[in-house]
Amino acid sequence: MGTMQLSRTDNCIDDQIALYGDMVYRIGILYLRNPQDAEDVFQEVFIKLFSAKTQFESPQHRKAWLITTTANQCKNVLRSVWYKRTVALDELCGAVEDQNTDEQSDLTRELLTLPLKYRRVLFLYYFEGYKCEEIGALLHISTATVRTQMKRGRELLKCRLLEGEIL
Image 1 (cartoon, one colour):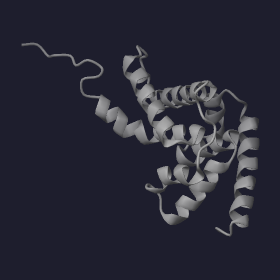
Image 2 (cartoon, one colour; image 1 turned 135 degrees about the vertical axis):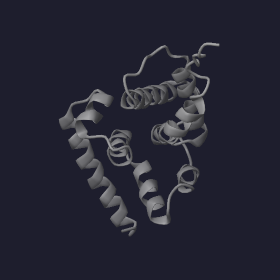
Image 3 (cartoon, rainbow, N blue to C red; image 1 turned 180 degrees about the horizontal axis):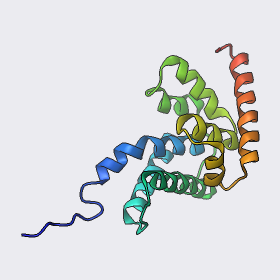
């Protein structure tokens, strides 16, 4: 009996979700600020991953594809007619507090209140470990724009944290 070649999804679905699931969900929260919508995006992204015929060159290529696909799926949700643009802040913070300490929760709560352009670059830099050049390529913006958004985002975050006497 020859060796049986496994299909792409036979043994890797659980592995891929374990590796990238938290990241995809957090990006969904960053964009949509709603756990239910983030879960819907999570499902759509992984369905696309396993139905796509894309051959990934490396784990970094797969991760970049997932980040881009998640961001695009979130943008589709934001453009949809049925999307509600208001979310209770305590509901939002409850979705991420389970994974954080109290100090991290305060920081995460404030990060999630920043405008999207600042949230996404700060998330990719600090939580996912991307460099400014890589973030620019992922988001299709210049490296200078990434650096400017990071600087402004950090300043805004610092002001908000100082106002709330969190630091």
